[in-house]
Length: 339
Image 1: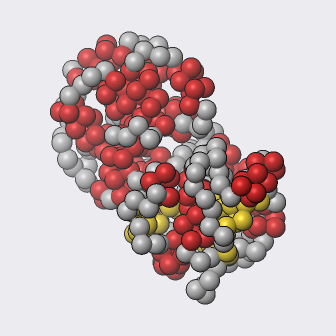
Image 2 (image 1 turned 90 degrees about the vertical axis):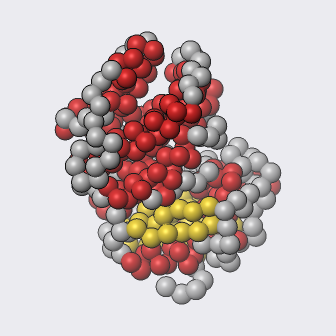
């Protein structure tokens, strides 16, 4: 690939906007596609995205548009940054416009409900003659555009995809590391949303730092166990897309999943909290999907089971907590076997 690129980011939410802003500031011709025609026109006119990142002014290299074809057909890199429930639909809408040999990246942290396919697997199914990668890591959009030092991971089995993404996306404050375990990187970004709900709930209940530390490490063990059974590399979870993203999402009020858990811990109803947040909370849907998969594969995931019982079976929080604390005490660390 040459030094100058044309890039389209599909999805005008917080992270899509932040990524498009980084790329455009790096000197690349960049399009940010939004589904809503009027919203796209307004954002292009006022040069900001007031619904998601108010006050941040777009770079002159960034164009906002609702015309997917006009954006994508010019691009050699396409980034899909939409909620998991919309991912396949958006991919199908874009596929006739994607140029052969283009790099197509997913930033979506989720699983398709009916199939348990990760987003890069959907890309493989829906697209032909493209090079696929994923981007994940401990990245809050508000901090990215505020130029806080940030690290993330690009994962692909195509080394040129990783190198190209590093060249196009990296900036003085946004650092990108490579990983060949695409499946593990995606699972890390997907699973951590569940445990952010758990730690948010625990914090609202007034637990101490001992408890939070235990929850974080046992969450990491559960993530690694589940991912390994599905064919990922447990070592991936020791990096930015695993423990890094887990720590960020489980300890900050900027995380929608953490805020949901905190509200539940305060005694509020799930439906009420989701309506108040008004944006997609991936961890709630992911919990349902992962719990079903763990049951099918007989994978030991007590935190997933406990959270599901609270959110969807109406069980009392403290009775579930007592059950967790009297359950099986497994090995602390065993990267090759059960954890």
